[in-house]
Length: 177
DNA sequence: CCCTGATTCGC
DNA sequence: GCGAATCAGG
Image (cartoon, rainbow, N blue to C red; front, side, top):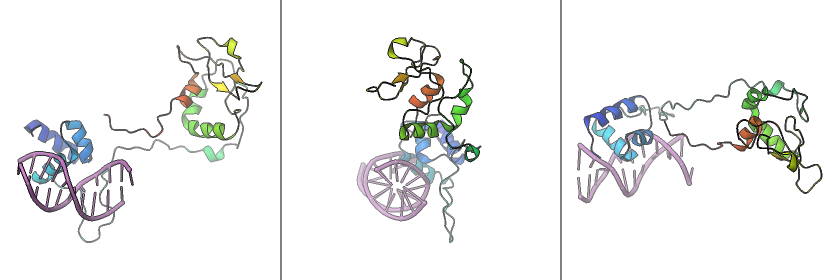
């Protein structure tokens, strides 16, 4: 690909916005990050400051990476309150609470036994329908094994809570924009 | 190992 | 002018 005026312009823009060479290369398409860097040099665009003498940690432009974890009132929370939370049947209240500490819940669940899930209807296999959460709880080899059984939205196999547990991007690479 | 930008140098 | 290879660093 050749450097049309358009592409050069975009390059300048993105570069000045602090995007990394590889990110810019991705947006432009058809070029490597090396190409981008090379072009930047040829255009004599300001590289990422490295400052003369007292260089410390100059690089690393401001990346849009925003850490959305703010509240953190977690510490003020009682240690292990969970078990079977009394709550109205159609619990939609979960959603927000879950957003904040899915990870913790997940950890607890994996470490401890199976017990940490908020309200389970303790349904048996035969009691499941297409609208009940099929998240398994407990050891299938044992007697107390059951399924979550809460209402699942649409045709989802899990309730909103367990859907979040099941679908965790974890080490998600973010580069699409 | 992942990533970053910087430089070099054959094309 | 271009950009892969390489270097230097976090």
